[in-house]
Image (cartoon, rainbow, N blue to C red):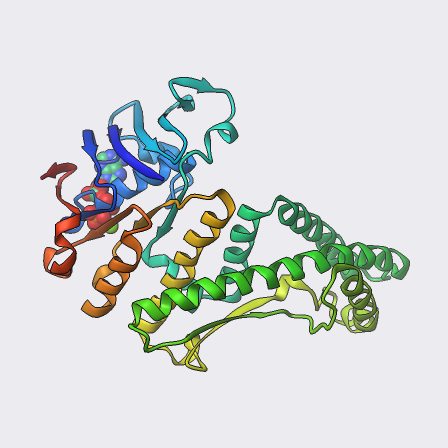
Length: 365
Ligand SMILES: Nc1ncnc2c1ncn2[C@@H]1O[C@H](COP(=O)(O)OP(=O)(O)O)[C@@H](O)[C@H]1O
Ligand SMILES: [Mg+2]
């Protein structure tokens, strides 16, 4: 999938901008606060009809203006599609192929993106909660069943916690809820296991590429419940028994103690735990490899690579890792990268890319 061009109007600090993109690699170079991330954000917005850094669409509109828009043109293996999105005080309007769509769900999904921003380091360094959020987002993108199971689980879990907090605990009711939890949890756990295995397969290869074969990455699912079953029915039975065993302790503590709401993922490089012992560069490479594995997952899913947005990633990697990164992805995936200085960029790849200087919401070619 390729984003051929983009046209911005009153988006963040861009008054108007009309750009054609290179099919392989586009690098946006500029000092701080010039509009590099804003430009990536506009592409992300064009794809997903939301920003990656604010939930308030209003912030995307240029100061003292009423409406912002992003138009773009994408080429996939079977179509050439104009997309258009605008945001004003009245909300968002979206067009696919010049035709307005009534629901954003009809709009999202035409342009697929994967974004890696500095905050994504938290996939490795942050709390288990951040990793669960990551895994839920990713599994949800590729499995509607997962989304349903997760929301079912969360609803019943909240009910169970309510019952556990009461003075006279209704054990019959909790048994009923535990049965439901076992059903939802068995599917969630197996999907997560499957997802982590797939991510590991791809991330390991990418990590080896970036580190020039020096580092072997392992990604491990750390389920809160230790289980033996390998299929849903058997796991459901196993979980039911475990929930029963734990009930008295849960009543004592007044909360649900076991289940996928306490799962985690761990990362290892050459068998040491990256979260505890990894250098900053190793942690960043791990997070990046895991995120880039998404490119492969999406390709598996829709038969086409999404476009890739890399915000402020180069300066954090040494020169070898940078050039391995850029050479390993640029032949498969159209990539957009921001950086503060051109010296960051390896000269071996200078021939097949477009470098654009960004200054105060304008582009200098
Ligand atoms: N809605 C807006 N209207 C006008 N300018 C904005 C708006 N939102 C952010 N900016 C400006 O954009 C600049 C930051 O751009 P950004 O793309 O984050 O910088 P960088 O080049 O460092 O990635 C700041 O100067 C900020 O004031
Ligand atoms: Mg930035």
